[in-house]
Image 1 (spheres, rainbow, N blue to C red):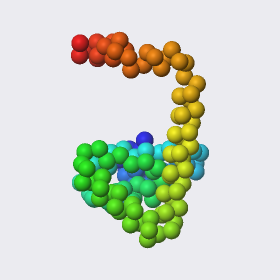
Image 2: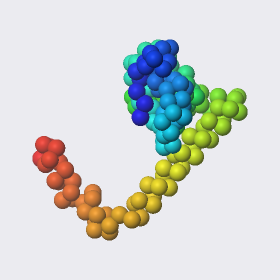
Image 3: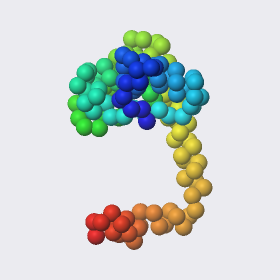
Length: 143
C-alpha cells in the first residue's frame, strides 16, 4: 500500500501514491516488487484537498498503482471510475497500464484461490462459526 507522503529526495512535486518515480521507479524497478500495489484512500485529505477523485485515480494508476481505495464517498468512486474509463478509451498507453494492473490482480486472485484449496477442512468448519465469532467478539471486548 502506498502512502500519501512526499519523499522530497525522490519526487518533491507529488505524494508517493501519485509519483511514478516512487511507485514504478523505486518499488517496481529498483526494489523489484512484482505484486499488487494498492493506493491508500484517495479520499484522504492529503490527496482530496488538492484534487478530485477523478484526477487522483488516473494519476495513481499512471504512477503504477494497481488497485485504488476510495473509501468515503460513492460519488467519488463513480467519478474515478468514469475518469479511468475515459482515459483508457483516450490513451492506449494508459489502457495498457490498466491491463498490467488487471493481470497482477488476476494473478493475486489465482494465488489466493490456490491457497484456499489447501486450507485444512477443519479450519473451514471453524472459521466463521458461531463459536469463532463469539470468541472474536469476546477478545475484541464486545461480549
